[in-house]
Image 1 (spheres, rainbow, N blue to C red):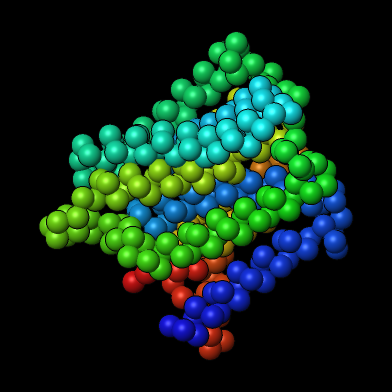
Image 2: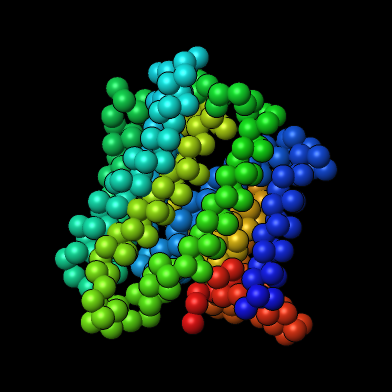
Length: 325
């Protein structure tokens, strides 16, 4: 176990070193582009936390991503130049977390086999959020969204903001990995395997699942606080299409791996950005990659990498690449 955790730690340290040094060897423009993908990657990690670890799939995760985006835009625009910016910005994490926990608590308390109903409810709420964002002009800016969003305090979106994003990614990845190794992570994994048995032993599984969903909402909200990166936020941040992308990226990268989910978002995002200018039907290529990975590697690219590592004689802990068990 010690050696496998050492391998996991080495992988995360290497990833952190690459991310934090990226502007030095890739340039500020590339770092800016990848910074946006890293924000999307955090939302992808939040999907993987629920889907791969706890066994329930949120299909409307962009609702919490968009909430984080709109709240951060409201705070930065309304408190520009004031210390209230720093005080109120955590609401971009707290509001999505509270909404996600409330939804999870209500849905999961109703019945134990709530997985499909939960997925459909989150999808419906995402569609409702998109409708509100489009039509509530006085608050969200409607179709045009909220523009002229100021930079985060003490940052510049084209220079040092990337380092803030990269540091957040490192912390989130390490946090999820740490939680997976703790008793709460074992309980989440047990829920996905046999929730009935866990309830038989006296655990309130609806609270455990609500806690997982609340944490996923917080992580999605943190990633969604991307308004300072783009300078605007529109209804697309709450759209169903973005939610579908989060699910695809999690499946391709590895829904049971926080590091894999993040890398899946970055890799597929970079490929899509490149192919968009080269092929008219670039979406077909992305779809083929998704189908191929899901068909050949059920645990995504992270699972395939773990298999290769074990074949090479390395012991890789489940908490980085796979669920416990």
